[in-house]
Image 1 (cartoon, rainbow over the protein chains, first blue to last red):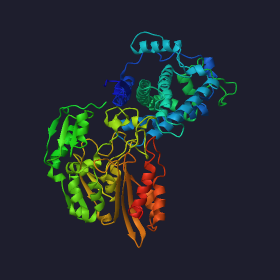
Image 2 (image 1 turned 90 degrees about the vertical axis):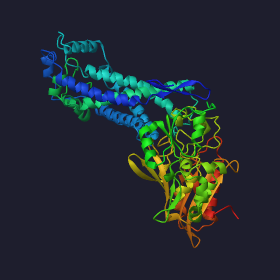
Image 3 (image 1 turned 90 degrees about the horizontal axis):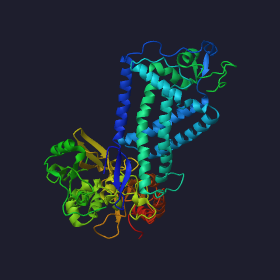
Image 4 (image 1 turned 45 degrees about the vertical axis):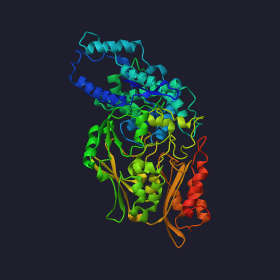
Length: 285
Length: 335
């Protein structure tokens, strides 16, 4: 039994059981990612820009106190990001390459990368909870209002210019939320699936769950993983877009310039502690 | 679940007479096509309705795929559709490549050897009954190996290189061809490619749903056996549950070059212990330059089983491999 989303099979008891996501969806995810890039590029180039200022003016007194370089990502945060990026690309590559016809011993690389990702996420959660402003990355009502304002303006309707962003613009937060949701689907299921393959970590136990439960796990893992293909393509696309390169540089070098800060951020929403200007890590980043 | 039906599912049958037409058909129908040689693997699948194809391409009329002939380099070129009986009885094969004729002569039963082909024997699918029963195991595209569960019946399964799937390659001629350093000639609409026999077979870590490198649209047309190992000292032994009409529990094929009692070179291959025939290169390297005696044979046997990981019911394969490799070095059972 097959359908668009999942593959069904028959177990030894003659029961229909979920097997995994339809691997053909990998092609859909790639097509979506590429389609998104093209659509966004056309949108930016040809869609009429809203009349008036792009963003509301910032508080000039506070803007004047912004230092020449503003630390954006600590070394710890950047290390996490790049470890996560490497493990994510490895996971997606090892999972999708066999579907696309490139056959190799992918399982071992996949589960090792999965463990690296898991460890880095645990580290990130602890780091973000105790050393960073935990809530700064989560969507809130103000983000929803801002998104609506931007949508209205993009559609040619009358709306006031939105405020500049806090540390994380609402689209960054949206992306983070999507990544968190897919990670919640892929990481726990992946850790359980480790029980099905030969690793030095523990004795295999394919009977840990029933066929049905395993099937649901494989489907969740597969569908979320396929979703990550599209999300990752979109992420890389934004990382290399010319107007977004300053963010990428910030993720490489850790800080942004005063001009970049003032162009994109509202000093009232991203409060930079200037008591010791230029001191890396001095403010909540 | 395997259900035996009176008739096979409907398919469209093509009976080409040339390799070119065959390749064109395989190119046209790609994944929808099934290559039928002797039919001994095919009809199990079709009658159990566990594999279905829209199109079957029957090779029985392609004369270009049959026969054994001497190659320019002094070796042999064997058509992939040559029957195992013809191969086992062919004078050239018996004369210089007795390893291959012995292996072919031990396949299944006389009736099956009359019908079965060399290409079919090396390209056949695994005989794991969980897989062939139609359950959606890893090899069938699922997410479990039913043969590698705590209560599984896995007496015949793998002790090496298992990777999710523990099925084994059941071919008798495959290890002999690898021991002879044969090459597999593969044709497709894109041309011809030649693959070493050793690399023709793939394990589940590479592709869990295939036993060989053959892709849809490709046809194994010939097997070339170079003269390199002609008239070497050969040994082939197949251990099976019954003396005829059975697949190997383990088989071993070896070719040794011995001079003055010293082993100058060797190729030793065991099968039915992994999803692909296993060439024992560690053993080959270890015995090179050593005297052909009991001590070397024992050392080779012990080396051969290093890394073996038995399942619940196939631990016996470890001493079996050890002793078969010993025999291969000695040239037979202890006198």
